[in-house]
Image 1 (tube, rainbow, N blue to C red):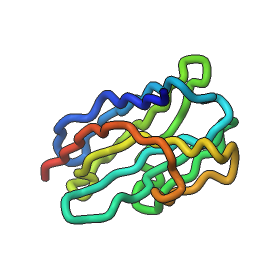
Image 2: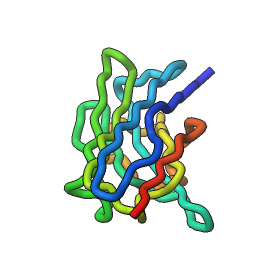
Image 3: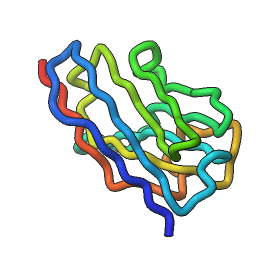
Length: 125
């Protein structure tokens, strides 16, 4: 049984920082694409950042230079460091896995086949 469990998140003022973690089980974590996605109320789920098993992160334009995705394959854990947060970053953040890919990871939510339960991030102005 595949499980992705997020932790972190919370509330912060604009300009602040937050960190998210996602621990995976039940999948061959080290070789597959993993990523962070978010969904704000009334909006579609969008890709934030993805990373291949060997690294090579890809970021959405809206977060590039502010967010950093990383992974620790020994711990089956994915991270997202979020700096210089803006009110428009407010959303539910989801960890996701694309077990069909080990490279050329996609920011498309439709490409992911496993999802965590989500963790809320709220940024106030």
